[in-house]
Length: 68
Image (cartoon, rainbow, N blue to C red; front, top):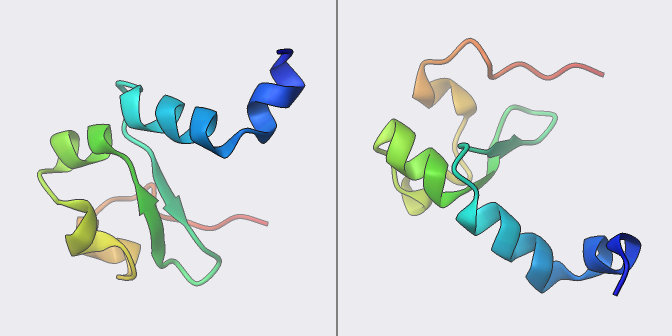
């Protein structure tokens, strides 16, 4: 399996995001948290179910900015 096939495999991508040590928060254009990996939970102390669907401003971070 080559890298392009791996990237298209949703299970592979979920595995990478779930096991990486860096926190990852995905925010949509409106600033709503769409995803939050386990490392982000450990780093922030917030659980996935507490933050998904809420404004990223709840995390009190300057990194919550959308750029086009």
